[in-house]
Amino acid sequence: MAVLSGSIKNVVISLFLINKSIDNINNRRKRMEQMEIICFQIIAAVGVARSSFIEAIQLAKKGQYEAAEKAMLDGEKTFIEGHHAHAKLVQEEAAGNKTELSLLLVHAEDQLMSAETFKILANEFIELYKKI
Amino acid sequence: MNILLICNAGMSTSILVKKMEAEATNRSLDCKIWALSTTEAKQQSDAIDVILLGPQIKFAMNEMKEAFPNIPIDVIDRRVYGMVDGKGALDQALALL
Image (cartoon, rainbow over all chains, first blue to last red; front, side):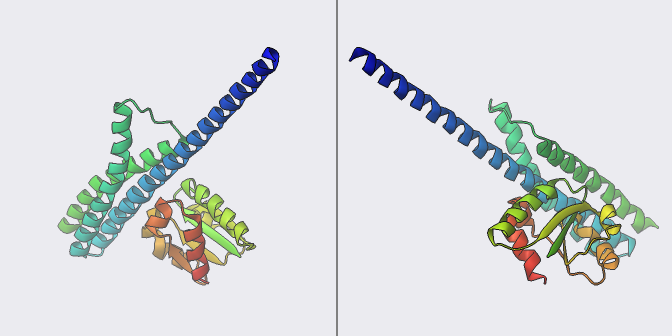
């Protein structure tokens, strides 16, 4: 009887451990899906912003300065959305919740940086076109 | 149906392609969906029925319209792209036909 209850106990413990590891896998998968969406939100927002900055340069080239300024403002507004999504990740890491690195996140940061550079250059380009 | 997605490097978009393929399989649609960069897309010789641009290259819309004058083109909705929403993107492609 003691042997039997011992093996039942082992089975219960094994089931508990299996359940726990399935939970872990599910949590990990959920976290990865959430990360994927955050990365995509960054890429979409800063990507649209970069596109607006480039459009602003193209408009200035045609002498449409007002439209160019508007495109710059639109771009800046969209850029901030992407910046917020990224800042949240940095703050979480500072709070001790380490972010899992993925190539997609690196790509998102790459896009963020590129958009920031385009913003500065687009402003300079518009000023230049005004002088020409 | 052949759906071509175009973005900067074809990287993030290739993840969206996977989701769109899964949705097409769910609906039993026979679709070929692939992602290319703008440069690669211009050299593309395969049959294309519809083109979707990533929202990050919206500025290249006119350039792409000139390169593909007879193919319907649209920019993927930013919300759809941001949520990696394969269903929404597939709906947008189908609506262009």
